Length: 236
Length: 231
Image (cartoon, rainbow over all chains, first blue to last red; front, side, top):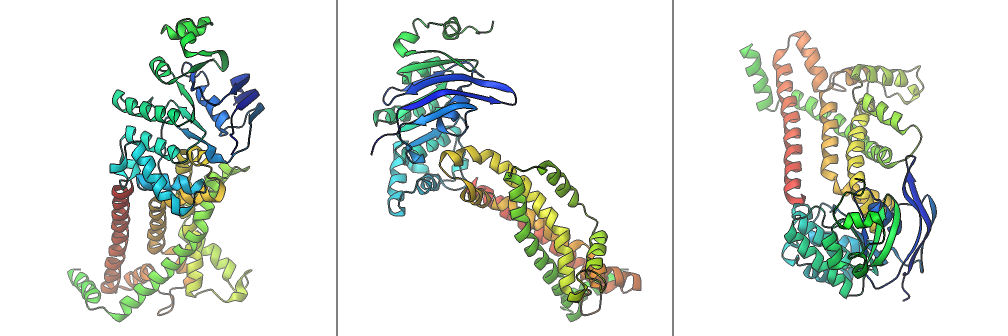
């Protein structure tokens, strides 16, 4: 089966309510390297990821995958996971069902996915009573069960404490190790360093630079990114 | 006064046939009306909740306003429709239980639809992106959301049932309060009170309050149990 990557954004922009949120941009995401979308709050990170994932339609330009694979070849984990009012296991089963996996194979895949994120012991618990960190891991299990080619993560640890963040990052590394392309937005510099191979720096809806991690952090090219990395307010 | 209360209790406790016939007809009429209103109201509410059409805001305002429809006005409206000279006069439904079901359905439909609309809209706002991300769209997404909030919807249905079983005006006008045919709890209470037969009125009043209390307790318990179970 040929892959859906690379993903090409050609002249993509997005405006809503008369306000431009993403300025026209062209970029290509290849398989392999983990891509971190970095930027301050309101830079347009979430909107950019939703455009890539197909949850938003671009105002101009087009988002083109190299193959129009089925939906489940890409998955997304949101800042706030949304769980159905049923058990943790049933939430994973639902995603497998939606992806068209045969009923006979669902239970095994779902159990494996829960084990992968360390949630086997709460499989029968209602998903909505799990802690924030557990729910986010469950969201990752839901994605893991599908073995997506691309995983989008929109600030997946923004609401979590350091312990839960650490666990989520371990699962993201496991995705990376299993060959899933990671595309993650964050405003945490530490997280970008820990998980990323390359950085796309977004500022007020524009991609100011794109560089490998080891080049970006010591010496960003743009003054805005330099200020961001130093922890200065870019508008000050 | 005490005598009347005791008399009422005796009628309830001795399973007085006349009293229980009236209770049975009341329940049959109101349950039928709520079943119909649910069948129509849930899809209507869901459609307004997730639909994107011109006049949607107006539809919501109208629907919410209709929750407060005065029963006598609904009764009058259905009376005009069903009266011999009215457009549906040939059906010969006026002063029959089906006419009462129709009137209560009209009365309850906006309540169920408006409450369902709010519940579905809130849930849809929360679920939409996640479901679309999973590749779940359209009808399947709608069914998933409806099933997930089924206990909130049950509350909407029970609110409708409470309204139907407690109203007097609509069933009085289109039913005519005919003894043994269209006499229900509320209309009997109104009539017997004015006639001075307080035991029957009080007995029915007790049953009616017990039913409304039981319904609300059931709704509360179901919802609490569901929240414990499903979060």
